[in-house]
Length: 396
Image (cartoon, rainbow, N blue to C red; front, side):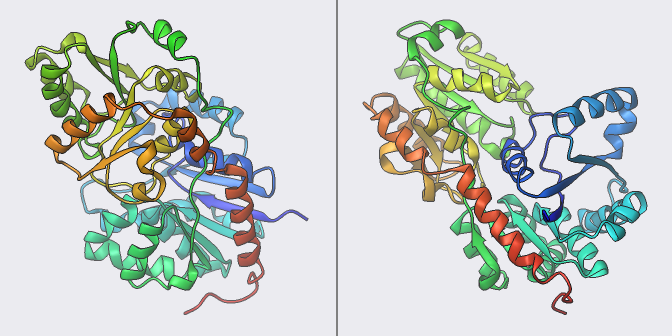
């Protein structure tokens, strides 16, 4: 009999963002082939009431792609403090899915994202006696634990988990500093799909995207946010243009900083040299990686961002910040790292990267070490181990 596993996470495709958290889409999609899986995805009630008809249509379309998904409206009171969000999520789950939670006979519960998801799942586990696993990703630990109330809840949830999956050793070390039992923690790097991300003919990719043969291209892929260093990249690019007139910067993604970046590019007289490609599907992004001279991710905080692995899988060198688990996966022969928010160092690293003859085949070979099939096999083993305690009470 296949194990019955319930995952609760906001990090999954939802009706308003089909490309959200593609790393979890890939991991859980593979896991669904090995266990009887349900992924409950909280969707903010504010988004639902703003677009009720679109929500119904998009929900139906998303379920066709992810039949094991279950979208739950997340009810909360805006503006009263994030310290209460886990309680609101727990109540939202109980009010809308009580029979599913209590009577489905789950073998294991799983919360992916430290807060509020894993905390709410820990409360369900405490109520039902079902063992749980928590997966933490980066900012849910590195940022959220700066607030005492959320830190206490996160640590409680993780110490009540049978296993904690951390996506980097740096994150596992931080959990130990916070008092999470190191024996519970397993480091499990995300994978990269070589079918989706692979080298493509460079000249063809550049022609298809409208780049000149002699044009140098810096690429950013991700959410367009200040915390991702998007404005830092713009400032570094502005100075680089003085030395490299034929330089182009491309942002692939969407987010609230697009307008400010557009205005900043105009103020620098670089409107024609900065392109905003919007949010793209995975199968489209590979062409942008193939066309780029260098990929840049100047985040202020991270776990192990899959986009770094994806860039390397395409043979594209990476310039990033030395944060989170990035130093664990980015060797010198595949790119360079600088301190976060140091735009002068970022400019220098990009200039050097643009003038380096990279061994792209070696970069691709390194990326192949991050394998989703091995990742999911290990994850299933952790679930099986936790399920053996299904009849035992959680540690008080």
